[in-house]
Image: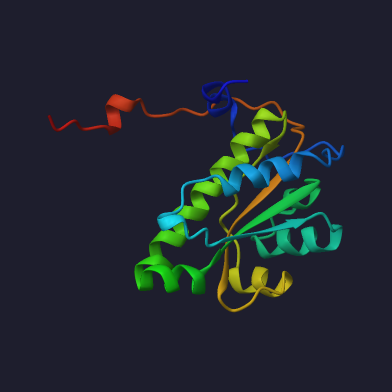
Length: 172
């Protein structure tokens, strides 16, 4: 599958088959995450791979009771190491670059999942303090996204998207 096919095929999926994913899939997704753009190459991201049923359930509860998440074979929690980001770039590193970098890593994971025949969803609605406690994160590591990943168990209909010409200005 080429890149544009993966981009077009990527959709938010909230229903997963019970079938697990291969042992090779997660390392491939994490490798893609680590190849994402990062401010000054600081790589202030941290990833927590959750397969444990109880922890997945607790994460789903912390995400406004989105229990569908717990059915995914894997939830990858994307975190920013704020101390590392701040050490490199001060306040801007902590409040902006760390967020941008982890967003790029998240997208790479989702596109790689699609290329492997998997599906996922970017979940941002959750209690950060509860997730940090569930995962026993240090105070300087901030959970920013949760990506439930697995084989889709739903038929996905493409959502409407604005056309490039509707959202683009050119200054020649």
